[in-house]
Amino acid sequence: RLLIIDFGSQVTQLIARRLRELNVYCEIHPFQRVTADFLADFAPKAVILSGGPASVVNPDSPRPPAKVFDLGVPVLGICYGQQVMMQMLGGQVDGGKISGGGGTAEFGRAHVSPVGDLDLLQGWFTGPDSTGREQVWMSHGDHVSRLAPGFQVFGTSPNAPYAITADTDRRFYAVQFHPEVHHTPKGSRLYENFVQLAGFDGDWTMAGYREQAVNAIREQVGDARVICALSGGVDSSVAAALIHEAIGDQLTCVFVDHGLLRKDEASEVVGMFRDHMNLSVIHAEEQDLFLGELEGVSDPETKRKIIGKLFIDVFQKYADQIEGAAFLAQGTLYPDVIESVSFSGGPSVTIKSHHNVGGLPEKMGLKLVEPLRELFKDEVRALGRELGLPPSFIGRHPFPGPGLAIRCPGEITRAKLDILREADAVYIDQIRKHGLYDEIWQAFVAILPVRTVGVMGDGRTYDYACALRAVTSVDGMTADYYPFSHEFLGETATRIINEVPGINRVTYDITSKPPGTIEWE
Ligand code: XMP
Image (cartoon, rainbow, N blue to C red; front, side, top):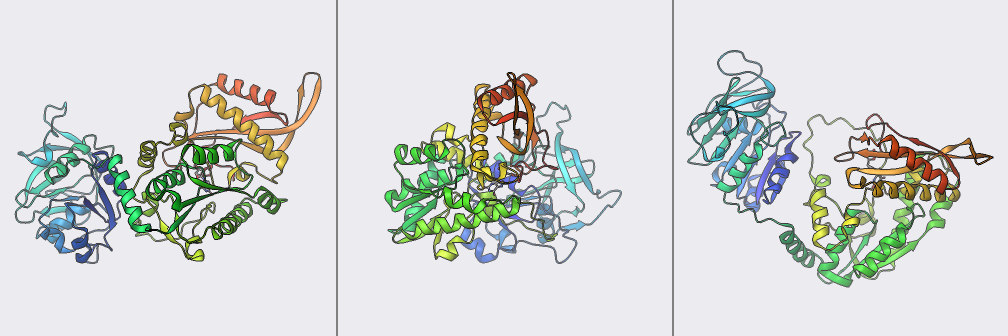
């Protein structure tokens, strides 16, 4: 496996993405953790030193242990990683914007030209540009001003005479730019060459991961029982399916039905896991409890807190009935695990308190099984397909833990929830019929706490208004509204008003995130 030492660059995760795309298994670890002992345990086959915001000119700036350079494995330094490598191996780095000769601070697009041949650059300088230049993305304040002994220049740009350098005998490579970002269009080629010369054969596949994960779960769990809070979302579903494959009936899932699910959702999820996947699933029907506690509550954070607390109580109640449970399964993903290297350290503001089962394991004295900890979201989907979960299930839009409660601004009533479920079902049906479901990150209806006047047939109506929401997004952190055609919107509004008693007005929410959020509460 390959080790990425993170010095806090905004784009370190992208390095891991590029390597996974090449079917190479890698892990990111923050520099604070990577000691000489850690290196000995990890035994990497290659090391990448990431970029980062610090300046090597500052004597307190982060360093990898010197042992990195004694392992006898290829090392690639990127940006800050390049500078740290050069300085530790006896070269020199100068800070700031120095004009003339040595180079200057540089942010953005640049072009690198080749100097001689290098294995790392095989097939790289073959662009349409007759000079053989390649576009790269630079982002650095400091620059190398003298190479370490053994290093040679293999690529230069107008502002970076040492854009690409290497000590080919020791297989140390140092680049000033970021090959992992989109703006270095052929950056993946460089990673491909690096992993090849490090001896990786690109055999890390989902089938392989499945087998490895199944063995690891068996080893971790032994004969103990495992419980899992199944939400119907992709992550907990794939985790449950994988653990079931490993330990069969030692796994019991609890599906908490809080009465805030979409139309037919509970029966679909429970049915699929029980009948299709043969899992043991407890259907905790606690609608009355949740809806009772939520009665009269309109404040969004209060709603979230009530649901979060009840969820934990209910889950614990059912879990206590499962004898000998020693482990709690969770669908934690890799992006949740990577410890970010924070230099700013300021407190961040809570926009919404998220619903999860954090804190439960300690409270119940359970150990954690987290078989997806090493995967990115799209890899979880691939694993789900590998495990035989239906594609329609794997491609489902995200659904928040507090469910329809946060799509029903104001007071929640059973009547409103019923109307909302019907409207949402019609809307999603429309999206599927028009073949748009997979293009959209998330789509849903919110029922508004306002009734408006309408006319249907010869009569007056006084019913609820609703808002349709559909967004595109990559990770849910930012989002854009989906540009439906007017025909689609018109047809959908007509269908909802005709088919859903209780709604007489439909609006489309065209707020992006930020400044809006995806959910209404
Ligand atoms: P917002 O509304 O914050 O949502 O823009 C971003 C994404 O997160 C989902 N979401 C949640 N998911 N528990 C979850 O598991 C929650 O409490 C929660 N709140 C929002 C939301 O549906 C969107 O995909």
